[in-house]
Length: 446
Image 1 (cartoon, rainbow, N blue to C red):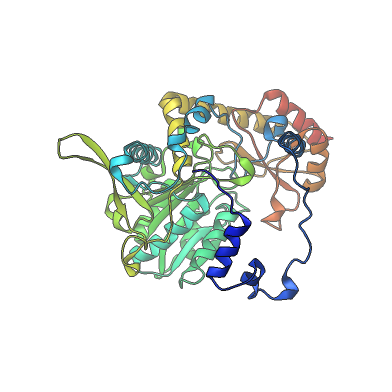
Image 2: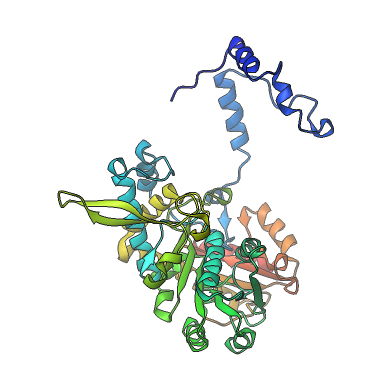
């Protein structure tokens, strides 16, 4: 579509048609005291070459992960992205996240969504997955709403080792829905205390929500938690913020999870200032009707050929509002496509090897910490690629010192857990070199 600007006469004609004399009159409903009465503080128009030079100067102020040794994770991870993904996903026919309403002209998009759903089911060990959500946080919030619809109960028990931002989003989603979130305090033990979890469950509990690996990077005992949920007759929701972990860990579905949600950023999506990301959502076949979002299905056309169509779209735009499960407007089609490409390029073997490389890097970090006299880790649980360390100094000051050395340090955990004043969450991936870990330890000890 070409951009054709309006002429002054065009503008006058439009204003005359709607009965006003100036564009300013369109904003009469905005109080004068809050209107901007000066021009925006931006540069005047420049020639193209000048604009490009100016934008390059601005871009030079960025400090990308690739230019540093990076140890910051906490839900966003610096993984290798095969070049083929940018090349293929950048083709014009893919560059729309809009709903493929017309299957006769959307077979490629619908098939890609179908393949994506199949991958998600395989990763999570579940029976059905949707075409994606906005991100991991909103996926978890939708899972909680879905559990309340299924159980007709209004309380959900959630571990406070679920990503803090995911918990905040979930609280926002349920705040006007009459659903109560009951948080268990698990940061002192490093993972869910099943005995304390049981004490938080009552007759009004619809579901238990945990994350594994949890926010501290520790692997939860999903078997014990799943057994407890089954015994109590409540739903079991598992969140996965680092899906690469599923290359070496058993999927949540094998432990009795009823709904599994995740963040797909690790699957071929750059960190990119926090988005756009990719929400993963899967459940049991028997709960299909209550699953939010949409689903692409495989069928046969009139000539017996394979075809793909939207087979479920239980949102308020498509069906009667009172029967809708969600008002999510679209899926993250382009992000889901990148995830599908990532998984297909790596295959089962490559995905497993990537997960091993992440774990091996974290094992090196743990070994270095164990041999240090100035750093320690408070937890001895099974872990993946993140670990909590306790320092002698304030983490904020330590991170400032690391930044001067070209190192992006870990997350100061006191931001979310006030009683963990000198604790830092460190993350490594397959891109972290042993030499970088050695340098980090020396800096932390200095």
